[in-house]
Image 1 (tube, rainbow, N blue to C red):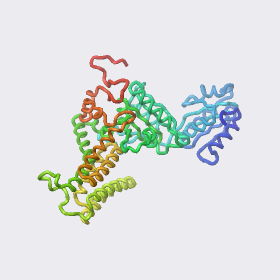
Image 2: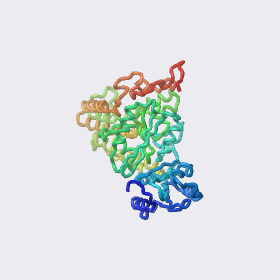
Image 3: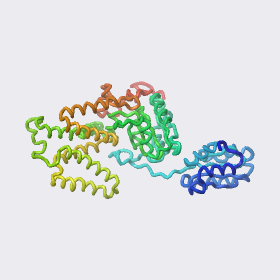
Image 4: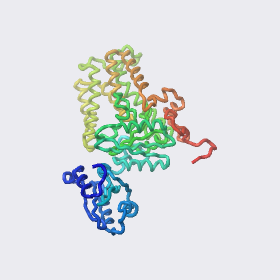
Length: 490
């Protein structure tokens, strides 16, 4: 059946069969009489709750002259006015809407149905994200409910040019995806590219939400470096929107995708902007240093162990003084795997026991491994420094990419020593140079060079000094602040 017929029972029989009424306990069809006419409400239990009782109570109070003639017109314009409503004339549209949460009202003798959006999704309240905590600032974060997330953004950006386009993806899941941007700032070519790629997604469902969407948007490459930035903080999302970025929000996910995203977007954190500019700059330098150490410290130490002659005078304390029963490379690889095992165990451990797990891993396992000769003390030391640098990296996905590069450098050093380290670093740089995020070079503003923007990367300038948006995004409005003495058009 495509179009609805005038016979209510025929429509109900078809919809009941398609939606499994009687087999699925939560799909409800409530047949009733409204002002002397047969009617029915179709909804999913758990999505509307008490609102259904309010709708039914109101409909039962209607008199025949209230809805006859032109029943649907009168119900739509005069009767059901307390909710967001729509009119549909296809059974497929009724099914899609009901399974998304709204209530469908069908009346005998009418070829249209009214969709009443009185849904109330089961949802948790906005909470501060665990992996993006700040010492000062807002404590709210995105949730798994799309409409909550868009409301958190609109609360921060009350701009009539803010656009939230809704796109449904998934033949079976019908997942809602929101494309969010500021119309007179975001580059229209980038917006069109993202809209096109979202529209081209062909899959039965997206139960893994934003991660599946990301792989479709980036065309499923094997490049470990993320081409979008994740955030669960609405303030971070709002800042990027004002710079000219575009957000992709997926229903059932608390994470927003920010596109385009460069190398340097993944190593900045909201904490830097919640502190004084000088303190924020210092924190940024410390974080950069930690990320650099996480990449290079263990491969460099392995090189100095294998080639002690490289060490300058006075640095001969580096490296084991006696032969070890376990090869140094194997020790480092075991330590890498051990850190990941502890991390994965912590994820699956109840939070009340996670601290105890960390103490056991850090002290008992590490100390015993050293005492029995499995590890040398320096391996544990340098691996701990690398792990701290990894956890200091704001972008979780970016930190994993750095970890894979570190493993590659370890193997390159073990095989080719100093040439291996140099070649590995060159290949790492070449990979970054080849990477683009939706036509934006990944290493901008280092390559292509933009001296002003590069200085902004290394120095956290006070906000009044940030007068322009990132030029690489090609924003329609490049100025963040009005020119001195100029007038605001708005």
